[in-house]
Every structure is written in structure tokens, then in C-alpha cells.
Amino acid sequence: MRLNWPLKMSVTVSRTYNDAVSALNSLQSNYANIMAIRASGDRKNQMNIWEMQEWCRRIGYDTSEFDKLNIIHITGTKGKGSTAAFTQSLLQQYGNKIHKIGLYTSPHLKSVRERIQISGKPICEEKFSRYFFDIWDRLDKTSSSLDKFPHMTPGSKPGYFKYLTLLSFHVFVQEGCDSCIYEVGVGGEYDSTNIIKTPTACGVSLLGIDHTYMLGDTIEEIAWNKGGIFKNNVPAFTIDVQPAAGLKVLEERAHERNVDLQQVPVFKEVKNLKLGLAGDFQVLNASLAVALASQHLTKLGIFSAPLALEKDTTLPQEFKNGLASAEWKGRCQTIQDGKITWLIDGAHTKDSIVAATGWFKSRVVNTKNKKILLFNQQTRDAAALITTLRSCLTPEVKFDRIIFTTNVTWKSGEYSADLVSMNTSKEQVDRLEVQKALRHTWLNLEPNAQIDVVANIETACNIVKRYEEPIEVFVTGSLHLVGGLLVVFDGDK
Image (cartoon, rainbow, N blue to C red; front, side, top):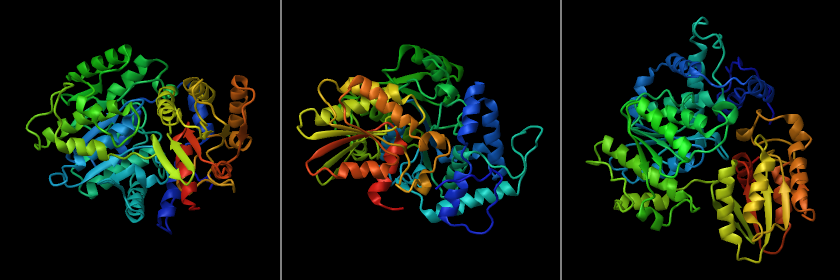
């Protein structure tokens, strides 16, 4: 599915879920615009927040109204989504005292509805389309001062992520959520979720280098952006293994907001639990979630005081249950399909590749089954990622076959509607430029490797399914790849 609609498109006839997804896809920034912004060196600024506040006004909200949602706000480079999933699972253990729990995360895997969940489930298609067009119509019927907001011309709409952020607030308010968890999209200071005025708690997962064109090239610049979610007198937490330079900046940012940044240790009871999310590194995210949920439940009056941030702290049984039952698809996920073991993680930064590869290695290092790598990363330094991946596995684990694919879903050349992406170069994808470059990089490291370059995920999946003996397939490099693969598994075109 390829779309080229302008941002000023007006939908007036049909109001189905597919219509909503098509309209939403029209709000994506195209590849040329993204490249122009990157080349200009223009990074997000305060206007991004002012515009979000104005969009909220136009759909009928003052941002202070969102305080009644009791929001936990989470950022970080690696692990913020997992932390959000653990936090949601912890709060769900108190369902007799919390009415509805909202969760806003990104990106999605198979369906855009996954980004807006209530009580652990994506909102249904009917509610998504109804609330989506409710906002669309409100924006069509209102206007902004072009002197103050020159980009908000009549008929224009927010970009893709901003629109979904607006939609999430609208959904959670209308559905009566009394606890919400918000995962930052990119950074923090200028992220569209950062219109939240008074969250119940703020958390920062592991810092690393990513999204440099928006956040900066150093860990200090990235930490400054992440620390932008801290609010005056709102408790703030981070893991206790942050890079020293990044931690220093986080502490400075917290001080600006009259907050003592609290470092969360890995709780001994968390380390001894079988967590619902696989991977040794998840103990960091689970421990951070414990601190956030504890503070949140104290704010709501469910706890008399937060849990002590000490390694030997005893956790409530509800917390143990929540950590053990947490789910987060596409992250260290194992799917058994007959003789094929799919080991899936959407890692797309150096740090996350190291972590995911460590998990994969621990699962397969002692098996004699053939091993296949299925990989893509269309927008970041893919060559650096596969070099890191291979070095983490060598010499204990060697792939018998490597498949480099695009993120296109089907052999027809189409994407699943919810997975349409306009932020990559269609020409590069069609010419398989990234995939051919990846093959060249790998062959320089391993000249005799068996490598396939394919144009879509369906074709890659068919190659794997030809094997008759037991095989283990490591799928990584991109959440878009993982999502497309899950769609192919479903066979729903």
C-alpha cells in the first residue's frame, strides 16, 4: 500500500478503520522532507511543545486536564518500552483499586492500535476510527493564529506521531482511565508527549546513542533531552548503571526542576524471579518499573509509602506476579513453529543489538541445529549493527545462512496497511541498496558465507520454511521487520 496524499486531505465520506489508517498514513513525513531536515541540522525546539498545546486546545482540552489521568512518564534510549510493559503489568495487579489503565507506546508491530491500549488490550477498530475522526473533524472546524503558529495553516493536521499522541489523550480521557503510562517517542524535552504537566512519576531507562540528528551526537546532549521530562517536585527515577557523563546531566536537569533524581538498584527479588520478558538485561527495566509503580501507587493512596530503593527490599506478592506475567511482543520473543524456532528481537541500536545477541547466544550456543539470521535496518547504520552482531557471536555461534530483506511485507511489493512507511527512500528499497551493502559488509568479514538478498519479508519467510530439519532463526535489526514478519505469520493481507 503506497500513499501520496497531502496533509490537507479532508475525509468526509467513509469512516471505517481502514479509512482512519489511510488518513493517518497521509500524515507521515516523506523521505525527502526528513532528509532535508537532517541536512539543515535543525533540531526540535520549544515550538514543538507550543504547537502540541495548541492542537490540544483546538480539540477541546487544556493540557492541565490530563493530570487526572495520573500519568507515569518514561523515556530512555533502550528499555523504555519494556519498562512501560512491566509497569502496566504491575498496576494491573491492583485492578480492584484502579479502574482503567491506559498505555501509550511506540512503534507498533502489526496494528497501529497497539500504541493505544486500555487495561492491557489495544483499543478496538471501532473506537480507534470513531475517536480518530472525532479529532479530525474538530481540527477541521477550528483554526490557529498564523502569527503565532505559522505552520498550522487552515486544513493542516499534526504529523503522524503528534496525531497519535493527541488521539491517545482523547481516548484515555473519554474512556475514563485513571492511571496511564506514557512512553516518550524520541528524546523528551521536545517530544510531543511532554505536554504532560504533573505526572505521578518520571523514569529514565538506559541511555545510549540514537536519533542523533534530533537529539545530539553525545551522551550529554542525549541525556539533556531525556531529562526534559522531569517536572517540578515530581519524583524522578533512573537505573543505577547509567553512563557517568549521562547521569551527571540527568542529575543537573533534575536539580533544575527541584527534584532529587533517585537511582534504582537491581532488586534481589527481581533478579531471582523468572520475568515475563526474556533477557538478562530486563532486570534493569523491571527494577525501574517497580520504583515507578510504587511511587504511583503511593500517589494514588493505595500504598502508604513508596518501597525503599534498596537491593534487599521485599516486594509485595502482587509485584512479583506482575513482573512474572508481563508481556512485550517483539522483544526477546520465542515462537515455535514446527521445527522452526524463531528468536525475535527488534533491536536497532548498538546497545540493543549487544543485548539481543547475548540473549540469542544463550539460547542456541549449545545446540547443533542450523542457524539463520534474518536482518534489516533501513534508516540507521546497518553495517555497524551487523558488524557488532557478528563480533558478539564469534566464535561460539556461526550462521549457516543469512537473509537480508527490506521491510516490505508481501511479494506483491505492498506493505500491510498498518505498516506503510513513507520515511524511507522508495528508490533505495526497490533497488535493495541497503541489503546489497549489508551483503558486501558481511562477505568482507566472512567470504564463504551463504547470503540471500530478498525484496520482502514474505519471500524471506518462504526461504526459511523450505528447511526440513530443525533450525533456529534470529530475527533482528528493526521492529518494522519484526512487525512485518508477525503479519506474514498471520497471513492476513
